[in-house]
Length: 314
Image (tube, one colour):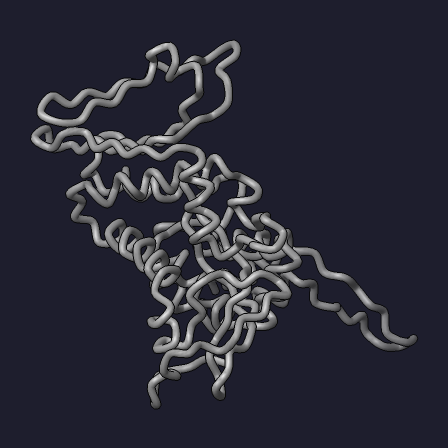
């Protein structure tokens, strides 16, 4: 009989042995990895069907376990909202992206949310799926519609010495000659570049200054703590990669890409930003429109309460 994939993944984890009184058998105390795998077991068939061979199921499970083990706040979020955890894991399976900080394909992000219940906002710790810069790049190249996808920082001296140039209009021009060695000065901005295989489509270039990227992150990231002016998650640990991802998505929005997964990522990114801007929408959907920092209290909204019969989560 073929060994169950969950068992294979569990074999990679350690288990603490606890000896019973004399004459008894040795009982094994499940580790956190064992508990996660046990939680995922009912989802095995569904996840395998969703993965469709894009990632080996055992590898995918192991990536989930390792990510959870490395993040105590994520562990708290799973206990507080197991549904959001499974939704995030399932989303990773749909895209075929492993949760691996080294690879940077995708992340499981714990964040403070607010949900409208019984006439008031209630704080809740939840888990969110977030594709990384390298994950989006991988998906985009896999579509066979794109010849080149890139996102890079631009340094002060590259601008002052004319090594970075972007001209729009009837005779567009783009060039970036990076200074690979020596003093480049500070990063002053980022750009995203998409070149389609179709030669009739001109290269798509989008730019943002570093200040614009920082403002963007503060406005839309659910991991931004306004009181402390700090980020948790990838915006805090790998700002450059998240900046590249932001510019890559910005360029993708103007590219004639037909792939369903890519268009879904772009649409979800746009939806997340709209949620941060339209507070009235939050009241209807029972979801807070903006990230809630630890300890922050927000008064109940003045708009209409959620429509009766609208799905709500505890």
